[in-house]
Length: 294
Image (cartoon, rainbow, N blue to C red):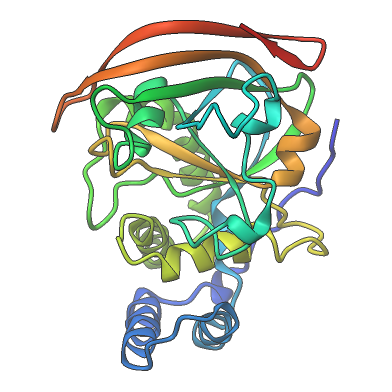
């Protein structure tokens, strides 16, 4: 089991008022736009200098592996890629081929997953068309593994969550409420505002801020005693907020996750505005001795 130190609390006076976050984040966004900032270090320096504190402490929770299934969809060129190789269906191993995404900066991959198959397929919707062959793998976290989650699945400025993520996150909301009820009411309002803003960035089609946040949280905290998140959870825009996604560090995937089964589908139809993809099952793969058997 991977043990991590218990997350510390900030003192009441260390929590900024909501006006501070509103003004600071507005300035942060305006500076990025007006100066057309694209490189990671410039955005990082602006973020740190503007906010002054390390805010994700309050939205990071330790968790233990359970029956959580994580789904990842991929379109694969079978003439060029080996579909018996597990790595084919994991994160991109060749960093030079990694472009900026919603939760990663260029040349720095994360493992993108979803809480259900439909959401995983919808995340590939821009490329997966009716008639397209699509592979969907089911991954599991190994038993007795403790990990840290930065949870951004909250109702945000740009989304109203569906019942499925609401129900699945009930425990997380209760944890958050217990964690922040030690603060004065206006400080609790400030914390919730920050959560909503961070989650809202993951709904923006401009990935500069969300990719920065993800990299800063997942890659840059190696030497942080308390805050070392293994994954970020965020709302699924492509499933109309009825589900949620994962961005997971490659190190965690390599050491603590297993591909357990894989399906090869033919996409027949996506229901626009509704949850539900129509597919034909072509093949099912099982992992045997480190290889996928079809």
